[in-house]
Length: 428
Image (cartoon, rainbow, N blue to C red; front, side):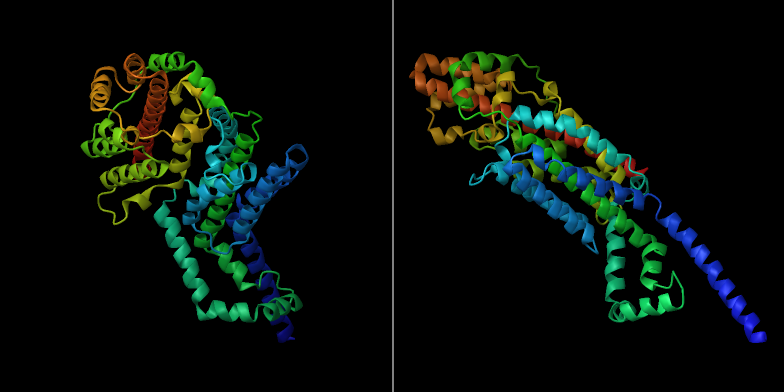
């Protein structure tokens, strides 16, 4: 009967091992399962929006659901996929404005700010996810290392052999009543590296849901502004007065390197000759981030990758909160009626072949009155010395150029302050 005793001891050991593994699995999965359930609930809520949105909104919902499910089903999520967010937002915008060159810029400033303000509660929910606490202190470098571990595991002969005979292994496991025999499950949950990747995947789905819902709300705005530019031109001087009455709060960065980057973006000589694009702003912020990161992590080979996930999202939330407030946006009240495309299409003065006398007057006026007041002075000067139509065009283009430069400068300054906090908190 010794064999019977040995068998009982064996099965007792198996049961004990199964219990231990169950406890470890539950410990590893804390926050993960609830996060997944929340995401599924969000996708279901998105589906229930179909009856209350138009045909473009339904197409937008399809894009959001397709992208989110693709990420959920991905075996190896990568943070670099967040670079696709601009194209993702553009594809949703194209549902509302098909055939336009920049559909994402057809939204009005007011609708964009209102939807951004409403969306902050959803961003708060992301930051309060139980699983997000485990990601908060992780740096981009750590997440990249986890993904490299996963790729090495997938390339190993043992893993490839398991994939080939996976069905037979699982059937054998069921025959022997070993509920936790599946080695893939063991590796996935016992390895903290893969747990990190699962949490990153859910975070990416949350972010795509966030920006997708933000886009839907902004483009579902019922306002039609086909003639908004003409309406503002009708009372251009009042608009310029409102613009000039706003408080000048631009502050140049103390760091000479950051100041140089900022001047290349929105310095008066640079912006008078050409208009900065969003790509220029993004490149300027990235260059500033490299300077700040190198200062906080001088020993790192890739200082940008030392930023932790928690500070990135928390400070981004503060930055978006500031942007959503009209008084911080620093554009005249009448400009809220504009679509973003109208503001971003400020023409270069050099393209208008302005006379040398007017160019000198523009430069002197800017140096004397600053960013927000020089358009009104230039408009009044042009009105006295030029035909009425030319004066209106000069004043209108000057107002758009000043507003765009001030917007880029303000958001650049705020981004630099938030980036400084991100890397300082990440280094603690």
